[in-house]
Length: 321
Image (cartoon, rainbow, N blue to C red; front, top):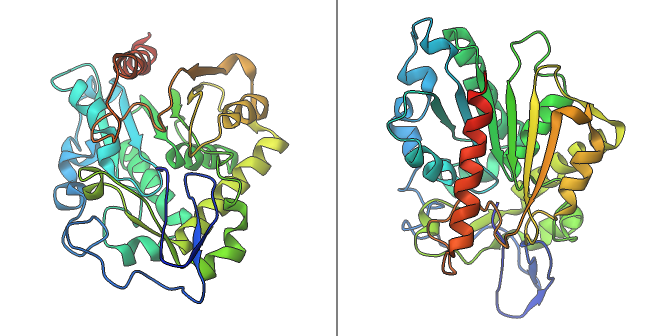
């Protein structure tokens, strides 16, 4: 999920979450025209839709040997409005390794047209994660690790709280990067009221980002996001118990225009047992600081160090015997 800014003539600007919701008096509905240069258009699609075997280990290697089946598999889950590109830098960094596999999941409804995005529920987003998890188990893989950024993290937390992993081989580790539990924009909870008036929001993507992130965010999808993170917050208040053999690591930027840093506090207080949870606050102003390509602002040496250290720690935990 990226920061939003939306503007139209005669608009009443409501500032907040990276959503920066704006209303135009007497205006609602969908964008009147969407360029095919954007992911939102009808031409560009996530490459995972064209060659899923390149992205998913369950398709790339459906019949692993007994040794291959015990290697770690990282199931990489992107955020709201993003695509599999969000984890491309981790995959590129891992290129050539024989120690583990990567599976980049495309959330349901994502990576397609604006209309496809608009019509998908958060359960549709999540189902893509479940499909790959179950396909890997069916193929015989036993060393599974979930990695989620932003809304991908919220979807994973919801899966834990709903009991999805009961009676299944559980993930050995779960890593969340800038998970959104509490939005930075305090107007998001009002989307149910404001949404029909807004119609959609628009974000200022860079030229590169516009091919991999939605520029236009239908209010229906924002309502789905709000429903999801509200559910996760309520479950954290009640208490969420990790599977007995699963270790949870949370990496949270100290300044984040989309996911309030307090999200890490809510997770820390709401997840047990404590000895299976590690929270690391990262000195960064980026949302999903592990993705550096196509950023609007220059990438600093500190940004690169944060990314590298996190990649190394994700892998090191999985390779511990």
